[in-house]
Length: 212
Image (cartoon, rainbow, N blue to C red; front, top):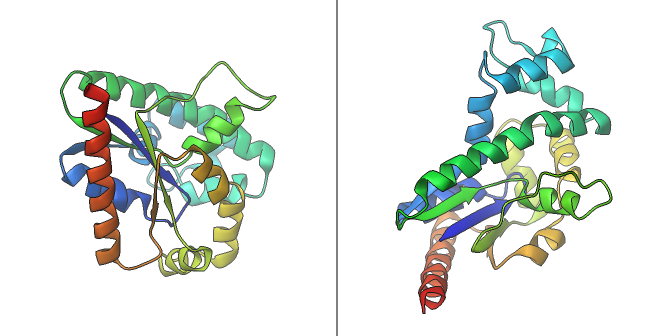
């Protein structure tokens, strides 16, 4: 099966994806792919520097992601441009890796933070010829808003920046609307592990039913 795991910033989707992969899946992380494509010398890196300027290049020559965030999260047009430069390349690379695993019999866990946002754009008047991928199941991770903000603050992200980033993302209502399974990660790690176990059981049952 091809499974998508998505959710808002700070909800714990990376932890959920890793836990699911540990049960017998392969974890493909869209954010990790973004970081790879933004390495110096790569086409995405060059395009970003060309558009945003040398100010987004750190002293060691790498991409200064905080400098990029400072630009785009206060400017809708710049955020749109960033998405235009990055997302198609990420989707192509994710697709390539998924295809390489096709037929392997492995459950592929694709962690895609902006899956719902991509589908919303696809359904809007601004649709471009770059469709979002389809999956056998979509697992959405949610968490209480104040808990999310607390987690982000513990990571060192100022509350106003966290709120700005959250405001640019889909709502939990929009995510739940496309979910085949929802995991609420408002509790502790033990509770999350139990929720992931239930999700994995559900996925195995769904996979078995699809083969009959």
